[in-house]
Each structure stands twice: as structure tokens, then as C-alpha cells.
Amino acid sequence: MDLLKYQRGTFTIMASAFVGSYVYTVGRLADRVNNNDLYPISIHYYTVHTITALFSACVVRHVLQLAELNSMHLLFLLGFVIGLAPDLALVYLSRQAFAKLKVSYGRSEPQDIPSSLPLYMIDDLTKEKIDRFHELMIDSAQVLACQNPFLLWTRLPYDLGLLTDWIAQAQLYCLVREEGLKKLRASCVTDIFDMHTRLTCSGAGPEACNVLGLDKSCTESLKCQIEQDQSFVRLYQVRAALIRTQVDLVK
Image 1 (cartoon, rainbow, N blue to C red):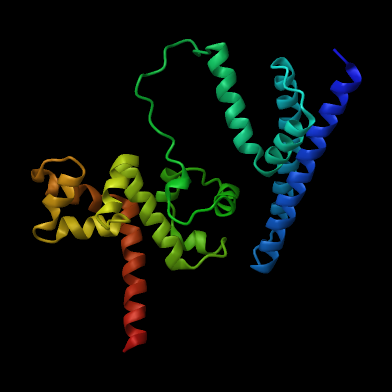
Image 2 (image 1 turned 120 degrees about the vertical axis):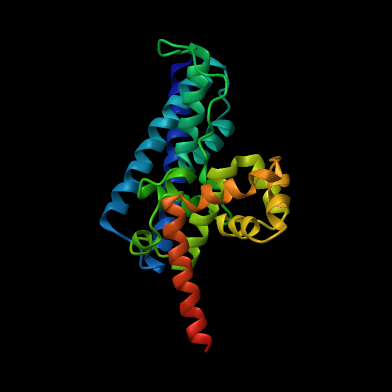
């Protein structure tokens, strides 16, 4: 192996990862300053982002060497992409490593593993917004569905109504999962409030259940299940208060 060429490749991918991380950090900091949403902890967050990108790029470099992929153009491209999203690179590497090693942790894994409920399934949640949620330890739709919108409103630069809508979408996602969410969206049911309205209105409940592949006799029980969820009750009260405020303003 040509040691000098190998060192050049390592330097190339790590330097490219640093540039990608720098571009991402500058762009995000500019957005945060523009929205008056910059906190001291955010600087540490982006510092960790850069360090993670460098180490991830180094690991990828050694893995590519095993596959004899030493093209400088490929290394530069991969390094830049890793700098932009090192978390995705780590997830991919860890999954590939566990699959190769066949790690079992002492017992066999269940065949039907629950999904992680990613935030990407929520409408309008881009990577930048998801990264902002990650700073608050909200890394899945399940966690988002249980949040108090008033607490998020004080820590995020988003409108209270928008936060309420995202949480409502997350609650519907947690209830019906990916396939059910796709089917309901095709029927103009986009969040848990729409679902509750369909189940409450006469004649619409059985149709909503039919979309999910459930028997129409499940209408009432599904409605009670939603109404007994404390996160839904709290979110319903917030939404009702916002609607009353809007009505008062119109009057």
C-alpha cells in the first residue's frame, strides 16, 4: 500500500468533511441569528457536529480502503456529504457494522421490530427543523406527540399554532403508523383532530375505520381511545383556546 497516497486520501476526506460541516454550521447560525433563536448551548451543539463529522469521515476512509475505493473525487464528495449530515453517516455505519458482526446481545431479536417513528413523516419538518428539535431531545414522533406546546413555544422560534399542528400530526402518526397515515392523508385526514372529527361525525366514523382496514364497529372504541389520551386532551384544550381567541378577534 502506498502510504503517502493513503495519507492524502485521509486528509482529503477529513478536510472535505470539515468544509461541509463549516458550510452547514454557518448557514444554520445565520438562520438562528435572523430568527433571534441563538443560545449558548447551540454553539456547543454545532461544535460537536463538526467533531463528529471529522471522526465519521476518518472511519469511512478506513472502510473504503478495505473495499479498495481510493478515488480522490469520491473521497472529496463523501467527506462533504458527511460534513453536512454526520448523524446519518453514523446510523448507516452502525447498521452495517452490526449486520456484518451479527450482534445478538445474548438473545434473538423479535421478527416484528417496532418502527422508530421518524420526524421526517411530519409535514414541513425539514432537516433544519428536526435538528432544532434534537437539541431539545425530541428525536421521534412519539416524543413529539407527548410534548406540551406551550413549553416548546418558549424555546423555539415557531408559531404556537404551527407547533400544535406538528404535535397533532405526530399523535395521528403514533396511532396509525406509516401505512395508515398514507391512507388517511389521501382521505384529507392530516392530524389527530381530523381523525377525531371523522369519528365523531355521524356516518363518517365507519368510513374512516374502513380506510384503516378496521371494522366499522370499532368507531366508538377508537374515539374513546383518542379521548382518553392525556396528550390529546391537553392539545385539544390548547387548540380550542386558540380557536376561541380567533373567533373573538373576528367579532
